[in-house]
Image 1 (cartoon, rainbow, N blue to C red):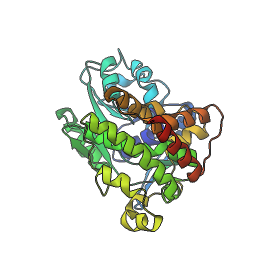
Image 2: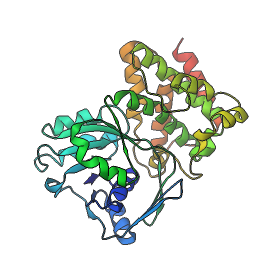
Image 3: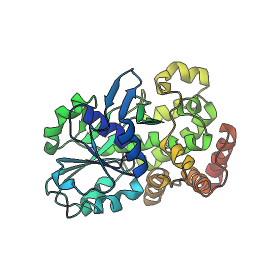
Image 4: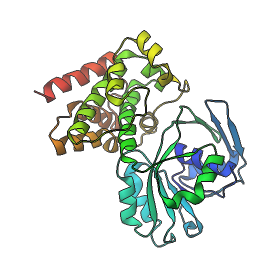
Length: 337
């Protein structure tokens, strides 16, 4: 069962269905009606394609049949985690594997608090998915699935591999989660740029904005003795420095960072476009909380939160790279005294 039939949940669940799994998508009527009518077409950067007919999976707006599920994937937005999993309480079998495939840190703890008898595991989706409509979802960036290793995963390892989504298992997922959070700090910058990811990251000023947020986050992590995993061509601190080099140098040294579908945008950009509340509390908000805990100022991430919240309420949404950089540099200068 996939609880949260958005872009990520539908893509991952669709790949599992294409590999022969019996999948039930639980989500909003609009998405469920679309994929039931059109079926699923799942494509990727490498030219791969899977097609699943509309009768090749089940759909539901509420998780009524969760008692028969062997595996539940949680793919709702982080803010909706507690409410979503409460709908499973009293229906799910003890021992059922529940895998969180969500942004941020600590969603698995929230789920475990509601479903203490289940095998709740943390996971992360390391790629971006673009919705093209009529059931067509496209993996717009490289990356796979990273999960907390546990014996409970053993029955599902082969299925994920057959689906083309091999599980990268880690004894301790936290360093990967913090590293992914560093990358996700680009989400608000991309949303405020109004540009596709590839175009935004090709612009030095937007990359400078990302470098400011990442350096601030890395300072807080260092004080907290958190060592993020290396997910990029260079270690996190060096990668943050590389972001600031001229475009020609960046393209030559880190060209693979720009191996992104031309129309792919961050999920936060999609949320703003659709008038939905974003996940800022689980991205920049995590850096604010960590900084407050260890005594490291985080004014750049605070300013990004303010700009996104203002955009959520109908204020200015689009900023040029230079304008956004000036906002963040001013925040850094005033916030650090």
